[in-house]
Length: 179
Image (tube, rainbow, N blue to C red):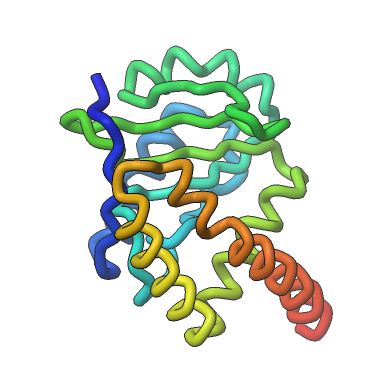
């Protein structure tokens, strides 16, 4: 089924927004009355930021247990279920097309703290072009160095991401309180 993973970081593409809308429609139709909201997250959701051409979706649902009951329906749509995949309270799916990953789906129940973290990170990068640019440079350098080692690619970015996540959460809390 899937090929060995190669890390390809490409320039931002406006088409990623269209791809998100299409994929979000598929997921929403399958999860039906469980859907509270679906967010476009990750680098493809930040205008101007280079990214691996894989759309990250964050569906927020009423009940994570209901998602377990709908796993077969998602899999019938081409989404490979991976369970929590290392993150408590998440249901993770990969969408394949022609042996390539085209989407990562991170499903959480409403109120889960990971939702706030993902949205704060995305919004912080959208609001701070210099940080987004620095992240893009790091991604390109990491992809060159670790082209065939996805774990090493992720590890090379981990400290930067953790730092920005903390800043983003503080920024979002202040930003929300001042609005």
